[in-house]
Length: 195
Image: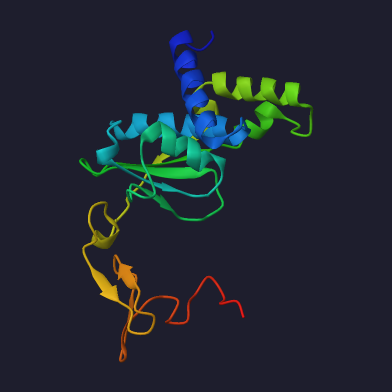
């Protein structure tokens, strides 16, 4: 028995939207469609104002999940926790329900060799897109405590770094005897000043 044609058509439409945003078709987009659809299903809402998602990598799935759920990094409804995994945790902020959804190992068995020509890859993508989600993703109910300073909305706390004088939002400053410091001035920069 095959998949319901309306589900497949909805997935194809969702994939088209994701690919349009992302810029190209790839397996990550197909998997992101499955993750987003299942995540929304288990938390019981599609209202972006009721959703926070912790995505576990900054690759293709993040774009698909963002487009299909309406969550955004800039709205603080999408969070990146860089575990390098094909997974995301979906939270319904109204009910508190939270589920981690991840790509199961069955996908590798389903698609086999990835070093093939473009036509064969696209057939693999279609196979994955049309597969039952239970064969693509796994789901586990979880609990996530979101710190108040991480919630969407206006910054609850801001500070001015006493060294660089830049504004630091959302409690990302470090308290010192000198006063509040941004992470870079506190010795934790992700960058180095060029000389």
